[in-house]
Length: 163
Image (cartoon, rainbow, N blue to C red; front, side, top):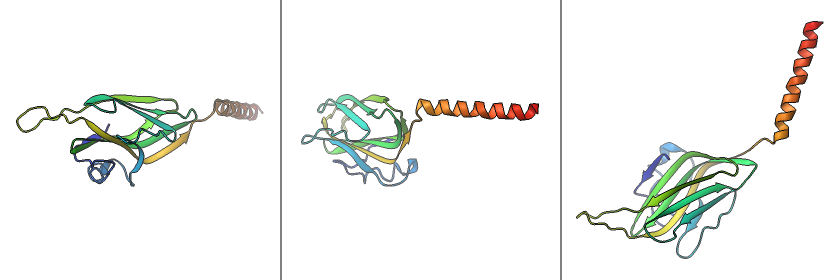
């Protein structure tokens, strides 16, 4: 994880983290998924997301690469909104192998000027990506063909050496 930005825009706005996260990648951010009171996570594409609980001040998250044939590498940003504030966490150049699940936990622990807890609770979450690359994983028979080809080359080289 590359960093956290307390100034991320709420409700899916990326303007708050374009500049602070700029050193970690390039290009524009694309919305991957969104969770709020009117919509749940849609989970389209090779990545699926879970986020629990959908309300409260702490919970867990996971992202799974559902493809069994391709790795995914991307800059992934979780942008959370609670009360009238937002924050974002960047996973820079994150590789997710076929079938792999990444997971973690989150918590809102804010205090006001007098040191008293001011935890407004989760409002919404948006997931953004940029620099996404999908790389096919070679099939096992590809490695077998490579080894057979190297064996043939070795036999030809040995034959030439002997003659």
